[in-house]
Image (cartoon, rainbow, N blue to C red; front, side):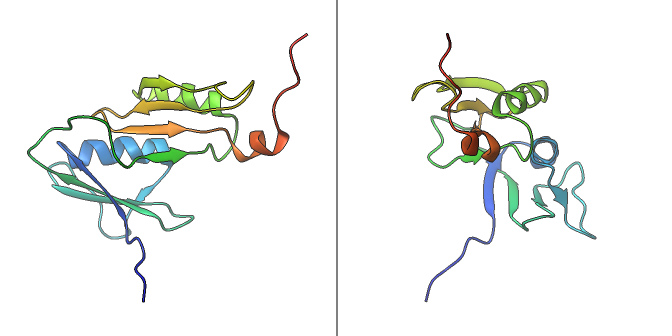
Length: 137
């Protein structure tokens, strides 16, 4: 017998505001017939395509230290760097830049959401399939 992941949970100070922020980032939606509203202490969002769900739960303690678990995100379309700019425009902040660590066109950027939860933006599947860019001349 084994278990499966029902949903991913993020502790936060404001479940509604953070769930709304992540909905913009990921394109997730509220559950049909159960919309998230200001003041809700628990807000669940899901990916309409895959069904993956994220639950935001309000807690009294604040984040301290590095996340032990985080999301690695790939753009559904476009490039890693285009997605990084879009996510920065939503209010994400840079934490640590690992782009190019393993040669040109490789790596990822670690960012933080408005409450300081880290996540990474990886290269898109198209970028990975295309391989590294040719060397600069």
